[in-house]
Length: 184
Ligand SMILES: CC(C)(COP(=O)(O)OP(=O)(O)OC[C@H]1O[C@@H](n2cnc3c(N)ncnc32)[C@H](O)[C@@H]1OP(=O)(O)O)[C@@H](O)C(=O)NCCC(=O)NCCS
Figure 1: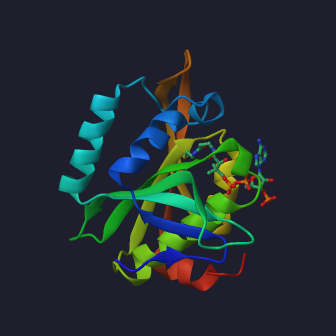
Figure 2: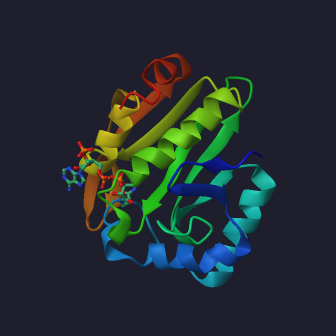
C-alpha cells in the first residue's frame, strides 16, 4: 500500500501498538456522543483487530506531524473502509474519529479526502457509502464538501444514549468525487 500523506497528516494501517489509543477513543465522552459504542475489554479489542486483518477491511491510524519536525508524529484518530464488495465496486466508510483537541481544523475532511482518493483512484471503487446520525453536523459538513449525496433516512434506526435516533445514508460516486476533488 502506498503511504497516504499530506503536509500535516500521515495515514497508516492500524498496528497492534495503536489499540490502546483506540480504547481511549472509545471511552472519550465527546466522541461516543456521535458513534455507536459499547464498553469492551482489551481482549475484545484485540479480537476485533485480528478480524480486521483477516477480513481485508482497511482501518487506518491518523497521525499529525509536528510543525517544526515533520518526522515526529502523534496518533490523533482513525478512519476506515469496510465491507469491500469487488463485484459492485463498493465499500463503506466508517471509524472516523479525531481526538477532540484536534477537531475544528478540518483534519477529518483532509483524512477523508485522502482515503476517498485512494479508494477510487487506487482500489478502483465506484461508490463509497456512509451512514451517520442525522444530527452529526460536523461530519455531515465534511461529507457534503467532498461530494457525498444523501440517499435517504433510516427512521429511529439506532438506540443511542437512551433514545432512538435517525440514521442518514450518504454515498459518494467516483465521478462526483473526481469532479470536486481538491476544490473545497
Ligand atoms: C466528525 C469529525 C471527524 C469531523 O472532524 P473535522 O473535519 O476536523 O471537523 P471540524 O471540527 O473541522 O468541522 C468541520 C465543519 O463542521 C463545523 N462544525 C464543527 N462542529 C460543529 C457543530 N457542533 N455544529 C455545527 N458545525 C460544526 C465546522 O465549523 C466545520 O465547518 P466549516 O468547514 O464550514 O468551517 C470529528 O468532529 C470527530 O471525530 N467527531 C467525533 C466522532 C464522530 O462524530 N465521527 C463520525 C461518525 S459518522
